[in-house]
Length: 401
Image 1 (cartoon, rainbow, N blue to C red):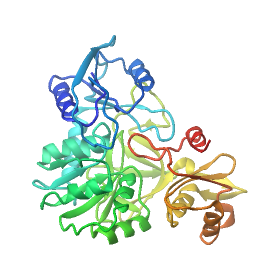
Image 2: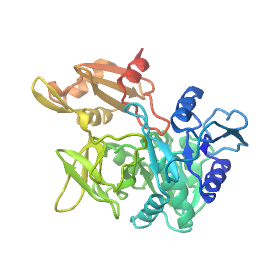
Image 3: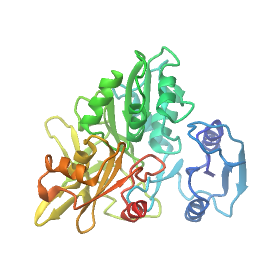
Image 4: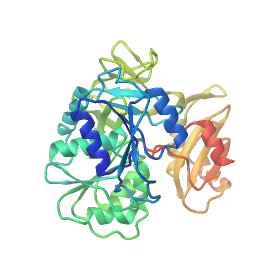
């Protein structure tokens, strides 16, 4: 059964009902276009598709009320025993089809219970990511149900509404989100004192130290990092911000670095309809992320995507370093740095900026061969439905044009 529902009680009840009946749930983000849904159903051939009976109101609500409509589809029974099938974020290209078993989901929920700093029974989790995706699904919904943690979606996806949700009760509150949500909280002018604000934890992308310091100064709460993938769930965390930019592998997770690539032990390939030894082989998932593992401490440092290492005039440049440097500049909210024959930067600015200003600032921080040849300034960088920055060059070029 395919669920094309927004975060709602309808989504939760249909998901649990599918699992209780022994079925397989295919999760489709309700924000996908009809064309994208049609392509997904052609690939996944479900027997039933559950959608909202009426259009979901546009707006910034994080949890909505919808009536579900069930439609038969000319599919067939599930060909695998996976409990859930999801699509990868698609931040770097076409989505991959990923299956996870019930045992794997239970294992991840129990993994969360062994991580120091996660919300405990009786506490609150201010849930910002969609439950359709792995962070909101397992780190939010399933962990919350298992651990007795109250899930509190804010009334709207705005900084003020998130602050209101934190302050709505006196019990300790953890905010779970992605880097995009940090910007929402940063936009709040003179937030009230929030002694119950325990921490904010973000997944999706690692957060620069400057952003973390600014957040902690404003709210008096630590900003924790979480590293994970749809294929695995949570891989490592630094919930207290003690090891930034490194993370510690989550309990039960084994990580190694081979030729500069991080790999995670997985007994089986999570990919459906894909046999690609560059993605999974011999019990190891190839993350396509560059990184190192400290043999003494076990800490993992993520250096960005493997394809972020490029050669400029015979000199190696780490595009992640350029990106982090850009993101640290005043007035810059986010940046994506790509290589298409030359280093090109796509920059989201929050205040009036000029290319010459940014180039002048970068000249103080980066060697000439590392600096972008071209800077594109945008009001908003394209993001996936999970809030990740899109790195696909075709999409980025369209955003500029």
